[in-house]
Image 1 (tube, rainbow, N blue to C red):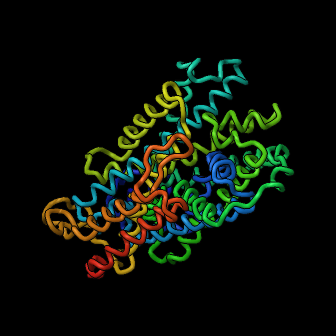
Image 2: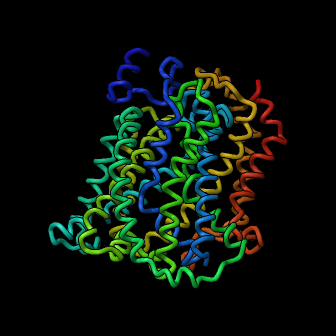
Amino acid sequence: MATDTAVESRAGALETRGIEPVPEAERTGRPGQLFWVWFAANISILGLPLGATLVAIQGLTFWQAAIVALIGSVGSFAIVGAVSIAGRRGGAPGLTLSRAVFGVHGNAGPTVVSLLSRLGWETVNTTTAAFALLSLCAIVFGTDSDAKAAPVLTIVCIAVFVACTVVVSGLGHAVLVAVQRWATWIFGALNIVVAVNLVATIDWSAVAAAEPASVGAMIAGVGTIAAGTGIGWANASADMSRYQSPAVRGGSLVMSAATGAGIPLVLLIGLGSLLSAGDPTLAQADDPVAAIRSMLPAWMAVPYLLAAFGGLLLSNHLSVYSAGLTTLTLGIRIKRVYAVVVDVIVTFAGAAYFMLVADNFYGPFIAFISLLAVPITAWVGVFGVDMLRRRHYDPAGLMDLRRTSVYWYRAGIEPRAVAAWAAGIVAGYLFTTAGTGEDVWFTGPFANTWPGQNGLGWLITLVVAGGLYALLGGARTASR
C-alpha cells in the first residue's frame, strides 16, 4: 500500500491518503517546494485592498505602510513556518496533530474554528474571482458587469471558479505542489505587468504630502496585516509540510514560509497603500476588482482580470485542500476528495449570497478576519508551547478516537490545553473591535484602551493562551 501511494505521488495522480500520518519512507519533500506553495497562495489582488486600508482607514503614510506590511506579513508567516515543523515531525495535517495537544474530543473546538476560517477565506476568494470573471465577460461578450443585474451569469462565473478549484485540490498534494510552482510564473508575470501600469496612476504628490500617523496606528496596522495574512494560515501549515523529509531543518521551513509569502505580500500591500494615497475609494470598494480595473488603461483590462482570477485560484487551491483535511479531522467519514466537494458547495452558496443579496462585501471581510484571528491565535499559543517539548506524535494515537487512544486524557479532553485556549480567546475578545468605520460587528469592553485601540488583542491572546498552558504544566505532558 505504501509503495502504491508513493507511485501515485510521483506520477501526480489522485492522492488517496486522508489524514493518516504519512510513512517516513514517503516523506521526501524539500523546503523549496513550500516556498512556491506559499508564494502562489499570496499573489492574489486581495493584498491591494489590505494595503489601501492601511492608508485610507488607519492613516499611515506609504513608508509606514511598507514597514507594517514587512513586519505583519513576514512575521506572521514566520509563525506559519514554525508551526509547519510539527507537520514534518508527525507527518499529519495540523488539526490532526492537534489531537495530541487538546485530546481527541477537546480538539473539536479548534478544528471547527479552523474549518470556518478556511470556508470564510474561500468565500472571499470565490466572490472576488467571480467579480473578475463577470468583468471579463462584460469586455469579451458585452454582458452586464453588475452581479445583481445578471444573476444567471453570476452563478456561472462562481461555478467556473469552483470547478477550477476542485480539479487541482481534489487531486491532492503532488498535483497541488506542481501547479502552485509553475502557475506562479505565469500569473506572477501577469501581476508584474499589471503592477507596472498601476504605478503610473499613483498620485505621487499625495504620497509625499501625507502626514505620518502615530506609532500606535502602525502597531494596529501590524495586527491587521498579520490577521489578514499569516495568522489565517497558521493552523493549515502542517497540511503541506507533512510530506517534508524528516532531515529538513526547522529553520528552513520557517524561511520558506516567511520569504515565500512575504515577497508578494510586501509588494502588493505596498502597492495598495500607494494607490490609496491619492484615492481612498479602493479601501471602501464593494467590488475591488472593478475599482482597480478603473485605474488601468483599457488595453490592460483583460491581462489584469486574468491575473486577478489566477492569483485567487492559486490561493483557493491550498485553502480548499486544507479544508478537506480539516473536515476529515472532525470525524466525518468520507474520502478526502468528497470532503473537498462538500467544502466548495458551501463556499459556492456563500459567494452567491455576497454577490446577489448582500449590500457590502469587504466590511464583513475585515470583521471576519478580526473575529477568527483571535481563536486561531489562541490555538497557535497553546500548540506552539506544546511544540517546544514534543518531538514525537504517536501515529496510532492520532487516528484512534476511542478510550484506547494515548491522547484520550480525561473523557477525550486535555483540560489544561482546552482551558488555556478558551482563556486566550476571552482575553483577546475583551480588547478586539471587529469591523471598520460604521460596519462594526463586535466591540470588546476594553477595546477603547491603549492595547485595544492599537490592535493588540491578538498579541494578548497569544500570551495568555501560551503562558497559561505553560503555567498549568501542559508542556511537561508533551515531553513524555
